[in-house]
Image (tube, rainbow, N blue to C red; front, top):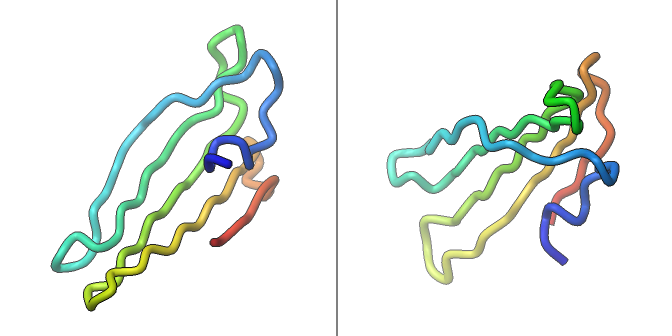
Length: 80
């Protein structure tokens, strides 16, 4: 299951990539921000997806996902 399948998106809604920020001195954390757009091109929410990689072997990765509506209410919050 991909992280996009965990989101609560309607059939007429899509994700649009907005920005990425690499944090940590080795760039071990990638923070990606998306907007949820309806079929009229209006923003109806946002998504924050974070991938964190350990800096020591075996370099495990952890992920977090949050989806918000326009009022910043959390619709989805998941970590794995």
